[in-house]
Image 1 (cartoon, one colour):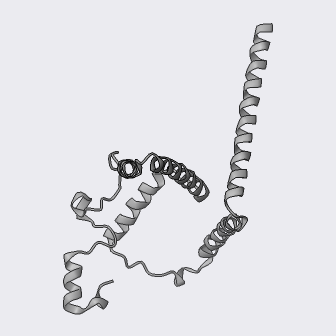
Image 2 (spheres, one colour; image 1 turned 90 degrees about the horizontal axis):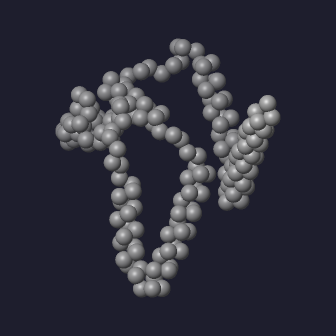
Image 3 (cartoon, rainbow, N blue to C red; image 1 turned 135 degrees about the vertical axis):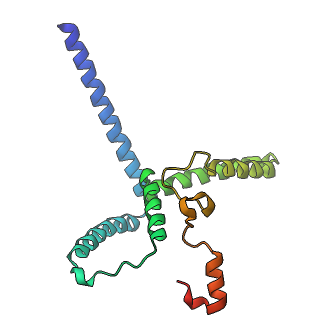
Length: 182
């Protein structure tokens, strides 16, 4: 019985320790964010979320007869739906985390660059860091389900992404002017 009581107390202490540590990490992260990012920007994100909720509520109150007509191509809808599906799978990171991550990375890179300049290997460090940056920023994982490729020949039904200059569009612009193409 005493052994079980010891195990229970040790387990409870571990849980309390983990919870306290998580709380301290959260508080320190919030302090860093508050220190690095002005309060004006933090207030902007709070106001924005309230505005989005208000917009969503107001959109539901618009009568059906005032809703805009849906006159889009089915290929555009398919493209947008597949883009949304691929975006939903990715974890979202806040802009504060993004800003802090890139700030710290930039400071470390500049420090190393200054060091390599002093030992006269600055050009080598720059070229190697550019090559590493290229390798890190190219995706080697397979395409996600429903993700649209930039090359239309790899997409289902050869659907192209928005902003692609197609031969048909170019021909219409030449024949009838740029105003004819939407």
